[in-house]
Structure formats: structure tokens, C-alpha cells
Length: 545
Image 1 (cartoon, rainbow, N blue to C red):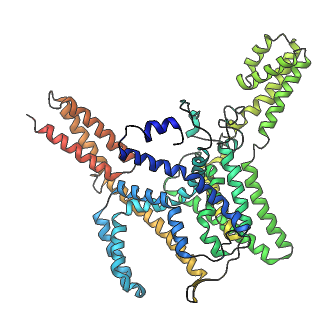
Image 2 (image 1 turned 45 degrees about the horizontal axis):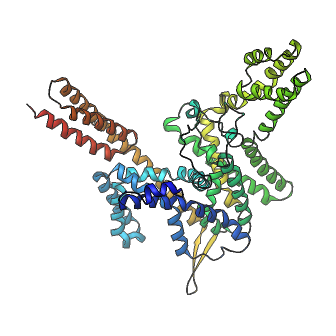
């Protein structure tokens, strides 16, 4: 957007005004990323320095800010509902369920009409709505690094040079996030560091950890209600810090329908951990110090796992210097020894045979060559292969069940951290204009949160059931069978001479590709629409004599 050449081509170019407006809107979104990042990062500092005390909250303005904070996910909801479509049968079922609930709950009788309408809409869009609600947790984890990359990407001037991403072929199977978050982008090339500061290390440790520490200090003088209202901003630091770790490819085979068990156990374990620590601290005496020790030990273990490659670049540099000194002591010139050491590490990758052949041409004595090769074999090669070897399965340690359990525990550990450091009262008091006070028991807040969580889970289960029915149907006449039957009909017509024109054949191949793509992306409304176009084309070809 800021490049002069791009402005001449697009903004001042021959494009129609509507295309220019669409491009300008996209540019405004990315240009707003730095200010959005600054406002989120500055919030804890503003609280600490009393610039924004955050003591009295106007709920109307908070609600407006919350909606604008979640506008991207709201647009995602619209796209999800449009792609899955509206189901009349589930809409009637949703309206009936809402009517039954309002009939049995006396306090909801005055709201029967709007609740029935809401149940009708929610039931009709249950497939897309349930999926969107269930994926909200994943979206919260992902949005932090995305915002930072959008903001930092405007600092480094972009070029028009085509450069490959550099991703390895096995990245889809396993990624060593601890290595990439500190050393470099490729485990198979550990000697290569990041080219600029827009990288994963800056996102995780430069922004994520700093934001987390600042928010902890800011919440030290606040209470439960403030932590609850600040939760969307607080989760930014959590998503930035641990998002890349918990969203990396998972080892082992999928657990299928039982994947909920380790996830649930992980969240329960994190909640139980904080409960145990709080109980120890409340008991006082030596139990208090035991609770502090458990708390520090748990977060110390997490930090140690994330920073396991803290000294890796320095250690690799020392090994390179050791090789250079060993070759220089054997009679090689110092500058040539440094170049040879860099060649062994970077170009040869510590390969013993290639190193031996390269040393044979260097003029070193045989015993000196053997000593250098021994250093490469015993120290350098295992050290260079360490990032890749850490990805190899180690019995139960990397099984899918343990992996899901660990990730859910880590998510719960950082999510419940905000409520652990603030006092939790038994009664929340909201003050309205005119001296009115609204008192909400903590049990009501927890019941409301549990209801939302249960609603998301039930909606997701209903959406999965409806998806299965749409794909396969009750008697095997679902969308998959319809696509297969239409394709067999297409093949039958294609074998008849002059039945299909070349344009119809090309169009049908493209439509079948589209419908399969929509099914894979779970956009069943688009798939049914495309299937209707296929049916029209096949019927038109069948009528041709």
C-alpha cells in the first residue's frame, strides 16, 4: 500500500472505482494493524501508570469495544453460515425446543416470541453455528501471532522478488517449534538463522512474553471483574506466547471420537493444579511455601521446554571455533582454517565422509585430519542433528493422547492464570446510573459460563450429526452418493459419440472439481448448488438426439 509503484498501478491506475474501493478497504485493514497492536500492548502500561486506571467501566463502551475486537470472527461466522446453508427441518426443531423451554421456565414466558424466533434461526443454521462456536477457542489461540505479523510486515519493506517459503517437506508431519522459536526456520539447517526481525522468535519471546509479564503486573491491583472484562486482551499475550507451540502438527495417529477425553483431562488437571496451589497457600506455614514451589516449578518446567535451545547458536559457534583452532594448530593458516570450519558446518552439514574428503585436499597431516574428523563425528554431527532427533517419537512421550493432554493442560494453565492472581469475590457488584446496584453471585457467573460452554459443545455435536446425514443420508442417499451417481452418468454420456460438446465436457469436469472441493471444505450449501448446475448440464445433454 505504501509503495509508489503499486499506488500508480492500482490506486491511480485504470481499475474501476469499485475495484479500487475493495483494494483500499483491504489496505485499511492491514494499515490498522500497528495501531491495534500498540493499543493492546499499551493497555497494561496504561493501567500500571494510571493513564487508564480501568477502575470504573462503562459497560456500553466496553460492549462496543468487545464487538469491534471480535469483528473478524463475526465475519467468519457469516461466511460459515453461508457455506453450510439453512436447514428447514432443524429450524422447526429449534423453534419447538425454544417453545418447550419457555413453557417450562416461568421467567422466560414474557420472552417466548423472540426466543422461538431465535431458536428457529439457530436451529436452521445449527451446522455452521455449532462449528463456529466450537472453533472459537482455536481462533483465540491463533489471532495473536497473526496481528503481530500483519503489523511487523509493514516495517520491513517488501520486494517484488519471488522467494520460496523455505518450508521443509516434513513440516506437515512434525515441526520443532522450540527450535524455530529461538534459533532459525529449518531444523535440517540449524546453522541458518532468521534474516530479519519479523520472525517467530520476535513474536513469541519479544512480544508474547513481554506482554504476559506486563499484564501480570497490571492485574496485581485489580479484581476478578476486571480480569473477566479484560480477558479478550489478556488472551492476546497467551495466544502470542503459546499459540505456535499448541498449534504445531501433532504426532501419532488421530484419536477419532475419543479426542475429547485427553482435552477434558488436560483442562481439569490445570484447574486442579491451581486449586491445589491455592489451598496450600491458604493453609500457611510450610504448606504455603510448598504451594509457591509447585507454582514456580510448573512454570519453570514450561519455560525450560520452550527455551531448550537457548544456548544452541552460541554452542554451535564454539564448535566452529574449536574446529578452526584445531586445524590452525595443525599448520593451516588461520583465515583458511576459519573458512574450512564454516564449510564443514554450513556446506557439508557435519557429514563425516564429505569432511574427510575435503580435509584430504587441505594439506593437513594425516593425524591432524583424523583429529578434526573425530571432533566432527563425536561433537558436531550429533549437535547438528539434535533438532531433528528431538522430533523422533520417544515411546509414550510423543503419543497423540499425551500430546493432546499436554496441550490442553498448557492452555488451561495460562487461561486460568489471570483468575489465579486476582481475588475472587463471592458477589459481583455493578453500579448503574442513579445509584442502582446490580449484585450477581459468583455461582451465577460460573453457571452462565458453563452454559455457554455446554451450548457450544452440544451445538458442535449437532453440527457433526447433521453433516454426517448430509454426506451419507439415512439410507445411503446423501450428498456423496448423489455426486457419485452424477459422475457415473457423466461418464456414460461421455462414452457416447457427439453426446457432449467439448465446452460441456470441460464445464462438467470443472464443476465436479468444484463440488469435491466444497465437500472437502465442508461448504455443503455451495456443493448442493454446484450439484444442481451439474444436473442441469447433464439433463441438457441427455435431451440432445
